[in-house]
Every structure is written in C-alpha cells, then in structure tokens.
Length: 88
Image (cartoon, rainbow, N blue to C red; front, side, top):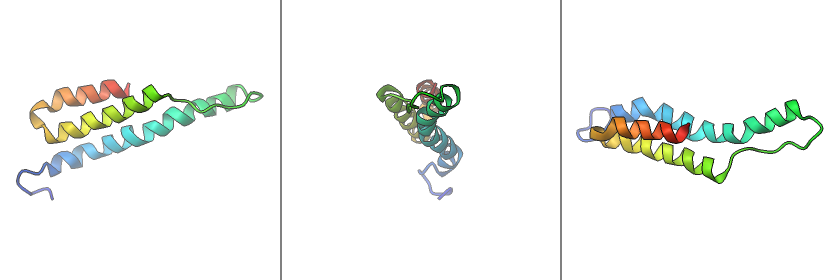
C-alpha cells in the first residue's frame, strides 16, 4: 500500500496515530476527565460527565481536517494547523 502510485500510503501511516489519538481518545477525555475530577474534589455531589455538542463537533472537525491534509498534500500545513486549532 505504501508503493501504490497516487495513493498517499506514507501520509496515512504518518498521520493515522494522531487521528486516532486526538479523534478518538480526546472524546473520551472530554467526557471522563471532568467526571473523575468531580469524584475527586466533590465526593458528596453526584459526578457529571463533561463535554458539550461544541466540543464533540470540534473534535470531529479536527479529525476531518487532519485526514483531508493527508490527501491534499499542497495544503497539508494549513490543514494540519486547522485540525490542531479545533483540537485545542
């Protein structure tokens, strides 16, 4: 798959870990980190999961921009930067 002409196999191999970590693990972090801090610092109150629709959409948009950057090599830097803006 890395040597197929016209297919960005190397780009996928380089960027897939970022897409998986930021696009998948970050979603769980948005939900569970506030929950664990509630449990730690406010043990008498019911814990709440974190995150919002905005954070969920932002994480997904970051993943879309990262995957788009793999296939549009001419715009890779700006698309990567945009992905990280959505992830922060």
